[in-house]
Length: 134
Image (cartoon, rainbow, N blue to C red; front, top):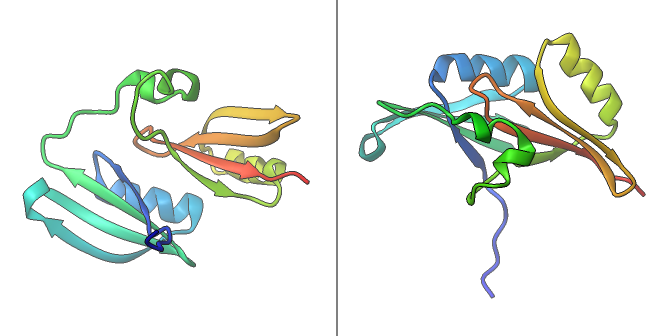
C-alpha cells in the first residue's frame, strides 16, 4: 500500500481576510502563502501552525454554510466531510481560553469514552478539539 501522511485541511469562507484574522487571533495560525486558484475563482491562503496546515478559500459567488451544517448532531445527517479535529492536553483549559476570546462554542462532550468540544470559526465551520484519556 502507498505510504502517505496528513498534509492539510481546508474550508470555504466568505471573507479570506476575516478568516485569516480569526485563525491567527484565536488559534495561532500564520499565513504561509496566499494565492489565486483560477479554476475555482478562489482567493486562497495556506495557514501554518507548527506542523499543521490549514487552507482557506474565498470563492466568488459561493453559497453560505447551511444552518444544519453549523451544529454537530444535525451536520452528521448530511453525507460528506464533517470537521477537522485537533488534540488538546486539557479541554477545560482550552474552553476557558476560547470563552475569554468570545469564541462560538457549538457543542461540548464529556463522556466516559472521551472529552471534546466543537467551536465555530468566523464563517460557522465546525472545528473539534479532543482531550484523549488514558
